[in-house]
Length: 197
View 1 (cartoon, rainbow, N blue to C red):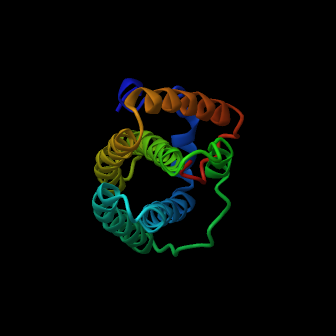
View 2 (view 1 turned 30 degrees about the vertical axis):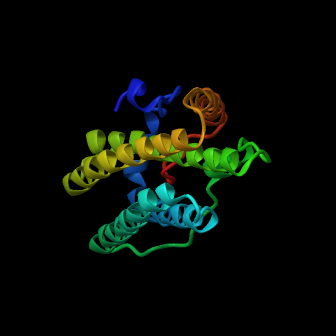
View 3 (view 1 turned 90 degrees about the horizontal axis):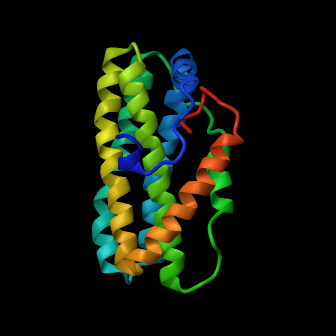
């Protein structure tokens, strides 16, 4: 899952995983909401673009998978005597929403949404990899390895879908722009170990 696989321009600050391990309750709560939002995002795409049969077919199983991840994170919270806390502001996703190009054709709007989803999955995958490799809790380490593999698959799936609705070279050009903008967003964000992103 190195840079050349995920395309990310800026690796996560290495301090993040150390702070995250000390705040594992906050991380698990935030992670649960990330999975819920991932499922909701796919439902939203299906509902808003029902005429795109290929999209509906590709994302329907992803909804079920993301929701099962949500349930499994809840299990990990319960096992450790924690509860699902209140959802907190996701500054990272809020910043990403600002780089979404407005207007254009329905296909262009769809491709923007697919690429933002791909980016969130890629960054999640990279963070899960850090947790898998660095965290001392063996059970959570195995869990994050499994999720790392799953998110990598979702990332590829979103990119592949985008290329079905727009020319490949245009998708790749826009993807590179988004990656550069995401790196700038991360550079300007405080390293927080109580958030997944």
